[in-house]
Length: 205
Image 1 (cartoon, helix red, strand yellow):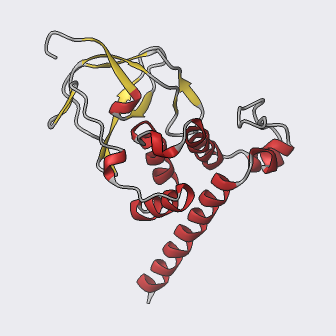
Image 2 (cartoon, rainbow, N blue to C red; image 1 turned 135 degrees about the horizontal axis):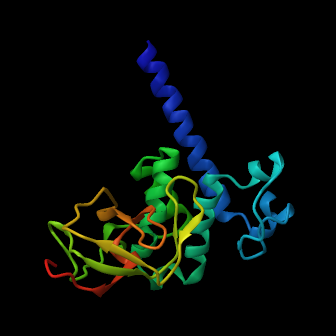
């Protein structure tokens, strides 16, 4: 009986987060509580850090991660770009909410109006092989966020170092997600091959 109850609670939590995720993706920026509290502007850009309880409730880790997805989806018409560069942000959504991959895919299909296949995410690059990410120095092509707080901690064009062949930490929609160390801050971040470009090859790379 306990397992049945736990299953019901789990499904309820999944639906709750899925609904929140979908609702935030389709809600205009100027209708967000975070906008009304002047935490973000009408493009979703952060104006200030939340301090009061009301502000913190309007701008949680979940909000930061969903806002990141929302900004990415608004950059280009969906049909003209791959989702490869969105994989890491989607992975963080999944990690923080527990939304199953199939449900995340359903939500994206409802928001975009398109059937989402793994082809959107598959982006082969020479520095990534079947056995993992090759050693080398890489630069970030986009800002990266902390997997713990959702705050931007690694800026575009800063570097990460892969000292030895690195296996994927996880896989989302067939896309490898790697846990790597950001050189300037020495903090761990998650990236896919769509988030980085090769800067320097190491001797064993």
